Every structure is written in C-alpha cells, then in structure tokens.
Amino acid sequence: MNRFTLIASTIVFAALFWFTSATSADLAPQKALAPEQFEILENGDPEQSAKIARKCAKCHGKDGISDDDEVPHLAGQNPRYVFKQLWDYKHKYRNGGRVKRIAKKLGPQEIANLTARFCASELPTMEDVEIPAPPTLVEHGDASRGVDACVDCHQTDGTSKDGDPDLPLLAGMPYKYFVETMLSFKDGLRYNDPDGVMGKIANAISEQEIETLAEYYLALGQRKRMPEEDWAEDWVTDVR
Ligand code: HEC
Ligand code: HEC
Image (spheres, rainbow, N blue to C red):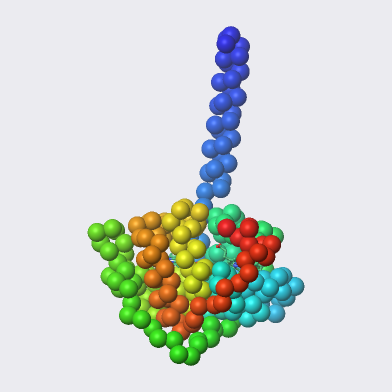
C-alpha cells in the first residue's frame, strides 16, 4: 500500500466511523418517555382516526379484544403503556412487523386517538376460570438468579394501573403472546423496557417457567386459552 492509498483509506475509515457512531447515537432507544410526552393523551379523541382504526381492528378486534392467541388485547390495557408502545414501534425501538409499518405513518395525535379508542373498553372476564396459586416467581422472585418478584412492579392483581402509570396490564393476556414477548425479551429482540428490567428477568428464567407464568396471568384475568388458528395467513411471517 503506498502512502497515498494509506492516507485515503484512513480518511475513509474515519469518515465511516464518524457516520456509523453518529447514526447509532441518533437511533438509541429512548427507554422511557418524559411525562410531558403523555400530555397529548388527554386530548385523544376516540371518534377520530376511524379509518386507521379499522385496520387495527382486523387483528386487535373492534373494541381491542383480540380473538387471536398471538395478538395482544388493547382493551383494559393501560393507555400510557399503549401510547409508549406505538411510539416505540414508530421509532423502531420495538420490532413488530405489520404494527411497526402502520405505526411509522402515525402522528402523535393519531396515536393518542387510537389509544383512547382501543383502551376505552374493559377486558371482559369469562366464567368458570380457576385461578391457580401464584408461582413463586410472581410473589417472591428468585434472589439467587437476580429475579425480582413480578408483583413488585406488576401488582398482585396484574394491573399496575394505580402503581406505575407506564406499566402494562398482564392479567388476561393471551397465552401465546405472553410467551412470545417474554422470549423476545430473552433473546434481545425486544429491548424497549426502561433499564432493561424485563430483558434481565426473561434471560434468567427458563421457557418452562415463562409458560407457567403465562398460564397464571391468563387465569388471573379470568380468561381462557384461545383456539389454535391456521397460522398460514400472510402476515404471520412478518410479525416477529
Ligand atoms: C396484521 C395484524 C395487526 C395489525 C393490522 C395491527 N396490529 Fe397491533 N399487534 C399485532 C401483533 C401480532 C402484535 C404483537 C407484536 C409484537 O410482538 O411486538 C401487536 C402489538 C401491538 C401493541 C403492543 C401491545 C402490548 O401489549 O405490548 C399495540 C399497542 C398495538 N399492536 C396497537 C395497534 C394499533 C393501534 C394498530 C393500528 C394502527 C395495530 N396495532 C395494527 C397485530 C396487528
Ligand atoms: C422492576 C420492575 C419489573 C419487574 C420486577 C417485572 N416487570 Fe414486567 N415489565 C416491566 C416494565 C417497565 C414493562 C414495560 C416495558 C415497556 O415499556 O415496553 C414490563 C413488561 C412486561 C411484559 C410485556 C407486556 C406486554 O403487554 O407486552 C410482560 C409479559 C411482563 N412484563 C411480565 C413480567 C413477569 C412475568 C415478571 C416476573 C417474573 C415481571 N414482568 C417482572 C417492569 C417489571
């Protein structure tokens, strides 16, 4: 390599380094939204954004009650949590196939309108659901593995509504979605939780423990497993 190519390639490498570090800094996940970013939610109008809402309803149900085990309910979900998730999909801090593509085009006011619409209904309970005793991890965690008790953040009833306003409702969550999202936290595919708390927890527990937790939280919301669907539908390939 002569002197000229050496200098030229040094400049190219330096430029490349500067470019990639600047880009990744710009894309760094914003783990928690500032309180003022939620103010727009107060003016969320469920009557607006009806056209887009029809698209969401295809998967999440008209009132945000999903009938698909892989699609989360929005009904009963904490509005601030839903707002943050749509924000995260929009800004590529959370993967999520079709949702991410739709969210990319939404403005903050539309996100607020859709949140107001889909969080308006409660998640209905079902009859004859027996709630099992909570698994040890729920009430006590496991100090030897550095796992905090779920109730510390998600409350005993799995709602978290009166606790931290940014936390999701877990009670009644579809079984498959619960398992999938915990596995996404485990393998680092989902990383939008503030301080990486869920990633750390999911990483320390087994898939079998995740399944037991999913069963428990489904029953806690007095909901039952949904029937298996035909997963050959076209969107399935791009949701994860
Ligand atoms: C093609 C089906 C589909 C459509 C259309 C769709 N979603 Fe979703 N949605 C999903 C799936 C599947 C997930 C779980 C994805 C993941 O793992 O991140 C999800 C996740 C979400 C979440 C995160 C919920 C949670 O508990 O973390 C929110 C919020 C959401 N969608 C809102 C919407 C809104 C609002 C629209 C319309 C603008 C929409 N979705 C359109 C299938 C869909
Ligand atoms: C230190 C607080 C903390 C503890 C302890 C905790 N979580 Fe979480 N969890 C969170 C936060 C914060 C989020 C929301 C992350 C985000 O903004 O995306 C979350 C999200 C979740 C989600 C995703 C919800 C959704 O709608 O997609 C599941 C499932 C979950 N937690 C299960 C658990 C289980 C099971 C335990 C106990 C083994 C647990 N968590 C312990 C703070 C905690």
